[in-house]
Length: 254
Image (cartoon, rainbow, N blue to C red; front, side, top):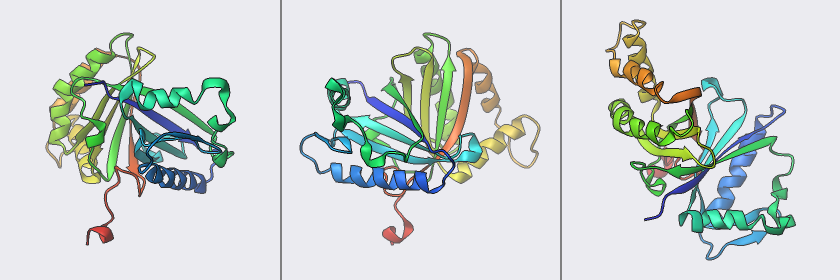
């Protein structure tokens, strides 16, 4: 079995115009739904590479109040076939810097985009099997050079059981590739579970006497520092309607 290779992209929109992320996510989810029926990849005018092997699994609006720059969209892609599949297709479009490489259909819509290639590690579920959820927890951490795999193994063995007890489901444990100092983890959750884990940590700190404390949350925070060497941040993402990880609307379930 080949290693899971994915792409995480953060897109921001400046000056602050609340319609731009909406327009971008609507455009993106619509055309990727069309790509699911494609039989072969194609380099197109204005929309770059179109391929079912470059699979948009998650399209999210970033919850600014949790620490994101506003406004921001985050996307999570699955490269079917790993390095020799979707990743190869993405790399091949750069050959000769063909004019069709550029996403001219959305010129001036985005201010900037930052992409990170991700490699799944042992214990990371297949991204294709990720379940929809109303809310996702996105962790980005800077680790000591060379400590990425050790940190992610500690998350799998030690942190996963804690978050699972608090209503979080692991989506992926990822080494950020082409560097040796960054990791990403993604978890599906709910608003109630998000609030519960925050209050359980507060209680463990002696700052909330209305709920049960979970001392394991503090223990993990200390344990994580064995591997961390720089910024660590968790923020929240909401799946955009029409994306694979968005829950089905209530009206559609009726």
